[in-house]
Length: 198
Image 1 (cartoon, rainbow, N blue to C red):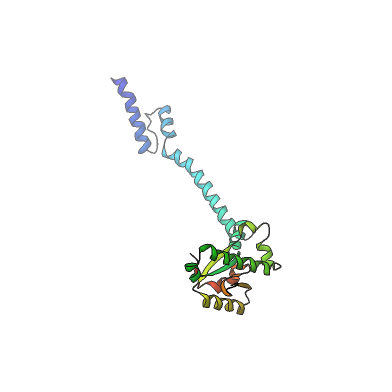
Image 2: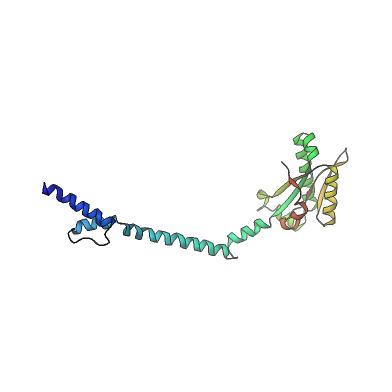
């Protein structure tokens, strides 16, 4: 009976050491102490600590890279802030009364016309360059009707913003307009009060 209880007592002492005692009691053998230490919180802490340091150092290097103006991350963020964009503005009254395809066609007419009319412009050349042709940015907005589209065209002309007011023939009335490509920071203020076309 004593030989059966003896390992149990050792195991209990080992657990007591593991959770409550900072140093092993003298009665515990080297094998038991080794077993306790291998699963003890100190070993786990020392295993985790290098991982945390590694992660924090990665975070620090990422933060340093974000703060460095020469890195690709920052330059791409700046590029997104001032991306080349073409604005297309449609009439809501036509969207509500014409077939959808007809309204989309009007927007395409204005967009292509604005691009082609300014094909030699540096921004247009960059916008349509082989490296950018598959990632063009357009913003499609809406106004209420004919009066608003004409007023917007006059405002853009007064502000020196090149655009095409598309006049549908043979009806001879304006259906939409499109700007040539511009840096977003240059033209966004002219359109800030308009709604996205939905």
